[in-house]
Amino acid sequence: MIVAFLATLATSQVAATPVLPTMTERKQAGPVEPIPAPAGRQDASDKGLGLALEVNNDKPALSVSIARQLRPSLKAGGADGLTSFFRQTSFSASATSPIGGKDDLVNPQTLNKLSVGPTVTMGVSQFRTSSRDEANGPKPAIGLQFGGEATFGFNRFDYRENGSLTKLSSDKFQYSVAVFASIYPADARSMVSVGMEYQHGFEAQDEEIVCKSQVVQAKDDCVKSPPGPPTEDEGLLLSFELRRTFGLGWSFADLAISPKATVDSLDGDVGLELPIYLLPLESKSPVLPGIKIGYTTEKDDVVFGVFLKAAFGLKR
Image (tube, rainbow, N blue to C red):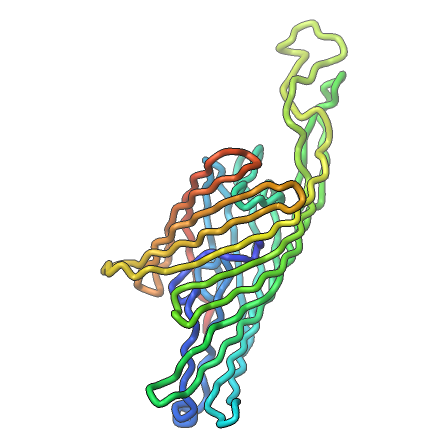
């Protein structure tokens, strides 16, 4: 998430600025077909149902997302009526959960304090652009997208009581809210995005040796466990992201990158992420593979990840 909503390239059309028809073409063609706005960072298609499996440092996570776009608005304007203004609002919802162990963050390079447990995210955004009808054809302008999202999650933290070794659990509610703004240059191959996200989560205490009040056999009377309930953990994340697709002349796919830098303004932690995508040229390809390299000052460790995303369109 976002920011949780600040997102990664999924298909080449995600980063593209729509090319609008001219005034004459619109009059001849009649009703205008909806032009999709860019999708979120985790989406494998501009709308519909998406499924993604991601593994970072042997820690997998599974997510399911769905997106829906409202009917776009396309209006003529300008002093001479030869400028077209396009606007479209999108809604999205997703559910993500780690699979298996949850000792460390699934996405430490994004400084996501909520990714240790299952979460649900809901977002809304609006995309705007324009096109000028000139003698040599329509001239697209830059596209602007802005929006926000909210993420909610619950997580159970297990720990041992010092002195009795009683196993206790603490269920905690976690949440985050985020806003973002993106610019899509008229080159139709890139995107620049900035965002801000407030996170309120919890972090398990570091494991240590916890023993009974009277130790007879260390192997039976001592265990390694967090010695108490989780501690509150807040973050105010500022992020910058660049998306870029590259036409390499391959017959089967293009390449894309989506570097992202995140700074936690409350504790000074920095996270760096570089996803590298293989974009199949066949737009209906069911898979979107890629690799990811990340680093965070919080863990002082390099993170390697792989992902495989699949999309099943719900478009009628």
